[in-house]
Image (cartoon, rainbow, N blue to C red; front, side, top):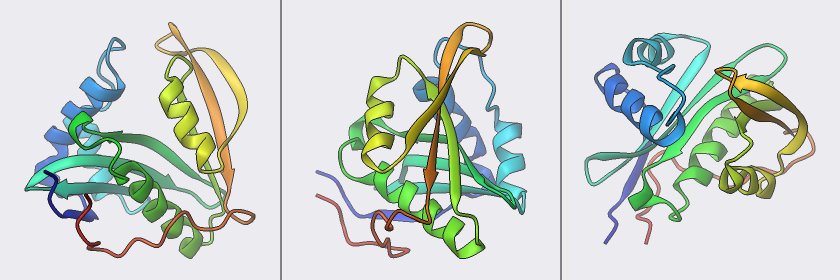
Length: 168
């Protein structure tokens, strides 16, 4: 049974856990790019938001987004398999997109592994469109799909209270 999910900014003490999740859920087979030090830099950066979804005192998912003047870039998004399908990924994206709108940034960009069909479907469902493919993007070995979401023409996915009611 799943408990209450709390969405909040990551704490520096969680950088190692987030990095481990990135390594196992996103970067598997590529080497480790999002190390604890790199995640920690994102947590303390004024231009980056590192968001976690905590459930039953565990980090169920996280997202990292950098905010620039012209666009935001969703660097990473992952949800532990146990909590997938509970709306956590959607809620993380909604929070970050709402933050971008408030900041006056209306374009979100991201890359994902071309072989990750589930992620491709996930982002398309929420209005992201494929704009290009970049061969060798991941360590010279794997193709990336670049996607963009124009927030000016897209309604908000959902309104996420900072502490939403329990999921399933």
